[in-house]
Image (cartoon, rainbow, N blue to C red; front, side, top):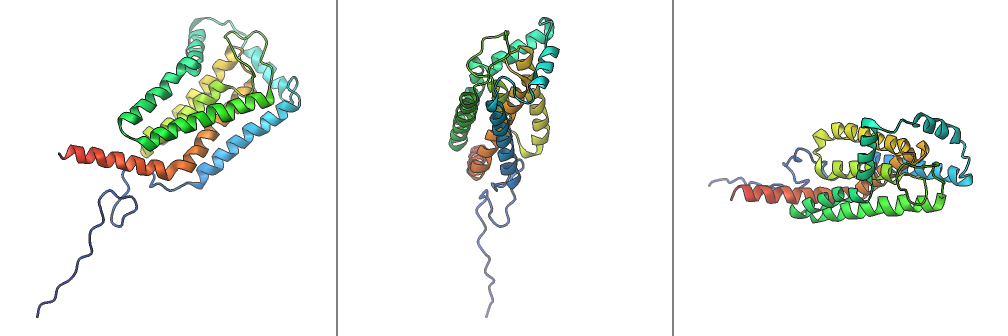
Length: 249
């Protein structure tokens, strides 16, 4: 009489969370991270708190002296390489700069990452329109005198700084592998600081406007990431499986 040993069926390859499988390099496993939620809410709360303070006295908030002192440092001369850099950043953060998120959206659609494309579209609208424009109309702070570029209504918060920080978060979440994100966040922080500098250099915003804008943009991106993280990870895994299947044909 022979004895047979049954072998448990193997878990489907590539299924997130399946026994015996490892998470692919550069992925997060799909779990929501409490730290992301806490940081996102803290940054959004900071931007809202500064906005509340400014709204109580838009002409002379408590930190107006610091804003004016910084603006004097940005007095000029407005020429040479610094002027060119500020002009490029002004273009990048303005209406023409929408080509960057549109290009990213097109890339995701080409890769058939439908959930990621929807996330990008929704998070960009949430951060740019609901958060930034909402704060602009609620606070209604006057801009510095004699801006060097064309500006719209409301100085607080800086839409350029918010857009830069938001874009850094969205690109990092959607395209940058986990192992390289620390370097990406560092480079993104430098880029956002450069955008903040350019807005004050061009006398388009007060320093506090740019700080609150960066906080609002990053906070909106982090909150959206926390909400949609598991769905984004599943979308990433499906795209990876499609590439793997195409490679073995």
